[in-house]
Image (cartoon, rainbow, N blue to C red; front, side, top):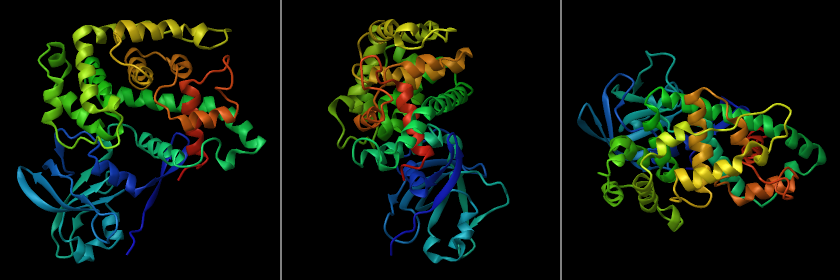
Length: 396
């Protein structure tokens, strides 16, 4: 029997947006959250040895044959994923013998009622584990990744729902506002990170996460935590050894330049050729909005700043769009949160990073950017365009 895909409405930047349960399942499948020092809702020490086999077709628990440790005692069984703990009983799992092998009930949101217990049909209590506080990025960013994938699977150019002149006008009008909301979310998440670790360690962790891309982000994050920036600065870290010390790398279909082993070597090279790169980022001067002046890359001095970023700080260790992605997705939000200054203009008008070609085609056809030399693509325009697609539910 085909499994039913549950959907939850979540308040977000662009109004409520739909989160399918398989997005949460995917986070668990890829272990894309902070895996250090895990505990269940009742305080038991948790270690995930194997997340289990994702059950996408049959009725029953979402993951089969998982292996976990609870207070150092090993358990083998199934994992069930829900948005909220109440769904265990709402779906009748407490009366269904197919769920009696569940050893961990994973939920996205914490339960408002601490007295809610997860019980099997024979009355055994199951430990609960909450994902939301441990996510490596905001929930909306996970949905944006899903949006990019959904849009990429369609035809290039404008979606059919945006073909009318009225829709294009509204699209153009909303782009900057939606980009601003996206920026505020990035700053908020950077501030949250800075509350849990010092600036240098946050930048170190965020850099490696970005170099891992979505599929290997959690492994890179774990490497950054186990091997803090001081070890890299002292040259005691071997990128090759680190790569081979980890299992679970997802490299199928990946471009050779984005292979995690290559990215780890590039990161080690950065520490070798410029061990002061983090203090240089901390002290870099970033232009802010000036009154009564037209804003663009030239007036903001972004061409000069990008040259300093690429040649002096990164010391030519990275190339392509990754140079820009590391700046706009990692450095600027962290610097803004750390210094308490608003760097929105630099973020908005900066060259776009690793945005896919189809989104550029989408924006160009709408006449917003990319149609002439005087109106180039920018990070903010593409961020706002993606936000518009989510707001208007142009993606599933």
